[in-house]
Length: 155
Image: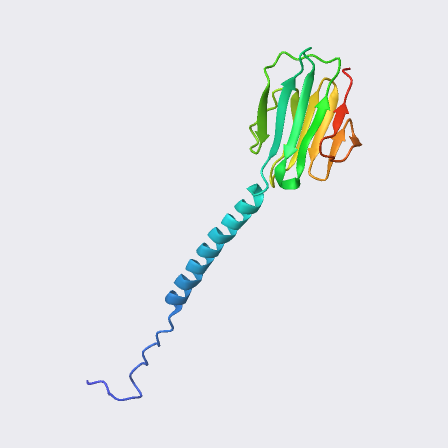
């Protein structure tokens, strides 16, 4: 037996909708967009730089810090610790990565997600917080004043 031929018995060929091509284009856009936004976010995280703290010692061995954050316009803010003593050598630390430790005192907290971030250091019984909007000494806001000298008596 022969099957009838003609338009009624032949199945229509499915049209090429280009679904695979559309999926590939969407995937490429998603990957490019992801990396572009990741790069933008990374730039926003580090563009201001970290806190720059010089840990110094006066001639009589008393610790002194000089704090700078150039992007925020914070320069030469000093914290002195009269009556305190440290044996650590002087040096500078830029707090731009979580693994950095202060040369004097103990790092209590840091949030460096978006620099300059927040740094909290306990030193000689005093808590020093470096926050972009204000300087906090022993839980009292002092504000950022360029060239200011703050003294914290040793406890």
